[in-house]
Length: 273
Ligand SMILES: [Ca+2]
Image (cartoon, rainbow, N blue to C red):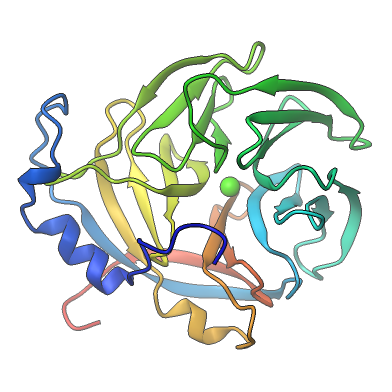
């Protein structure tokens, strides 16, 4: 694995961890939070093809098209995709010096992170021309991005999600995702859905639903069984990639080197399922 493997535990372990008291990891600065996260399962609405060679890092809809960033050194790309056919409509190779991470799109601009190179890039959505770049400040690395139509949110592999001004890309503030028991680190790919941040929990095949105002983890989606639905191969990797399609009011998820893109609906998880 390219990233540290210390969080290589399944959500069946993650969920108990979220719910069991664990004060040794609780920051004194966290606000009072008595909300036990709701645990969700899912229903598959549709299955679409996804490039089995795509090491998915960022995933977001914009004007009906799916935009995807692909990671790894020498293989990183930005893509515009027909989500129904999986056809790559346009693509841009990222310089091999950079390991591409998450993307988000605001006002026809695509913001793309690099992983450890401490720099991000801004592209014109119409032709993928590079418009500008920006440096990281206090955030440690580049992991995931999303936006609320006004500001940009960035995960960096720590227990923080950073709030950025899209004009300057300065880090204005941060939130700390946490349950009633503990902080939640390693939030990876992000998506803004109905005033909440949905974040892939790296290596856990699950998604945290986070209140952006206070960092409270209000829900956790258990997607651990979804990986069984995709073609198994030696490079098959973790769940990563959440994209909300406003037109269908549904959520799309995939994974690194997964050959399928799933349109899903989340449902509260019942006992034994
Ligand atoms: Ca996303």
